[in-house]
Image (cartoon, rainbow, N blue to C red; front, side, top):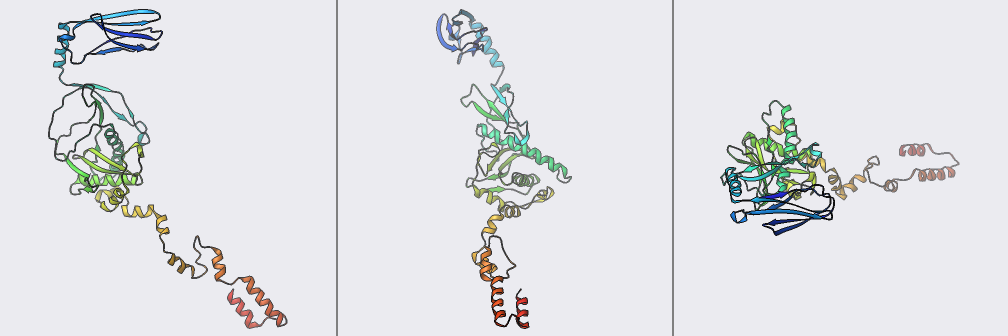
Length: 365
């Protein structure tokens, strides 16, 4: 239960005190200009907490006091009203992306309400959901990617219904020992795993049904869209409604996410994924081809030195990048040297070159 009072025109630093039946029970300090509410929480209120509650403020300008009678009748009426309003009070906050995927997201306006919780079996495929803020971040970021994926899929008439990652909200539970959790719409139907990763880090995908194939295509699409920096490792849900999304990134902090994955996971995906009918409809490139195109430097650098020597020993016209021109000059005789040798022989013969020797020089050139 919460009692509160509020003072206005607070011009200087003040001391606020709470009393019950004229006995001081709490003291707080407030700075000048702070006119917010001052609250007193009564945990597990009962008849023993009834009495006259007073709240006073004191500063250099004087003192002011207000009081409230909490009687047994008033307390019973409050408790009865709480019993009729079944459920636990909560606040829900959505994560908004106002600038598309370039935006890291911001928390929107709070929604207030009540909830009731019960333990139910929602299917073998549903994994335990930890009550952490980052789960809300991951699922809502992938939801934004899925919107773009669905827009591209609509261009193809043969693609059919597209996937939808459902939104997830952050929930604050002030009366609960675990104050933060996540909440989302209840999915009715058969809950199933489409893509997952086992405890040893091995990717597992199913490609029998239409939904499973489209989930694999979504994995391929988002990997290509992010240039291999983001990989979806788990997709679950009911038919086309997807939840329980998990991802890994090549570098920590990519797109504001913290789920950094090992290089082996991405290499495994390149060999594990098999393109299907829907990959072809979206014009996605084969992953092995993409990997070879993304690493041209490694292919050039892996050339054997022996192969370079064989190439260098061929025709002078086959000059390769990085080969020193001095090597060619050493391997072939310089034109200046040829001219000097020719001039020496001409001087010995009276300055008249022989026809056969002249022909030989022209052939060398």
